[in-house]
Picture (tube, rainbow, N blue to C red):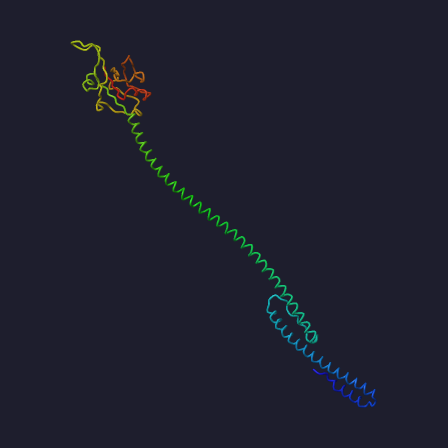
Length: 301
């Protein structure tokens, strides 16, 4: 842009130079003309530079306007301040706009810093979580190994338990057999036999025999009655000594005598006379009474 008073100043200086006739005046005029020319050149350069600066400023304003437009889209930033156009000139409005933009830029920078801090915190948290995850993985790996070892031990214990169960089953079977044998043995041990009859009848049945005494022509004197060597169980009545503690005689008025190995000392009777007694036999101690023999032979007198 050229200054409007530049041609007039040149014309005035040219007329002044033409009006001087002396050499000194010419020299001064030449110097003045040279100075005017230099000033014109400087003014021209200044104008060009100003135009260039204005162009740069215009481009900068356009660039800043784009930035301001982009920044304005960000939510939460300070809004533009609007002032009446008649109260401020173009320079003041431009300064105000730049201040508004700088405030928004500062707010945007502050938000960026906050975001950066949040990102840094998130990265630190991520680092901690990764470390915790590593520790958790190690713990889970150790737990998995322990669980595997426990599972193997449990499997071994199950095998041992199954073997023990089989052994217990076999032992239980043996115990059951033993119980059966023991029960049979107890039943056999508790089994006893008795018979009550007259002397003639018992002799006839072969339950008792006469032994000893003098052998006379008419009869044998002094012979005693003893149980036969081979007794027929069919001639006896079977009882369980665990349940039977009394043996009743057919006739309580008659006298009876035990000819087997049992003793009257181990029973209670209503009346006793030597080896003979009356009434039923009460047996307080079955084991003691039946110990000499499991066969009881009672002869009615």
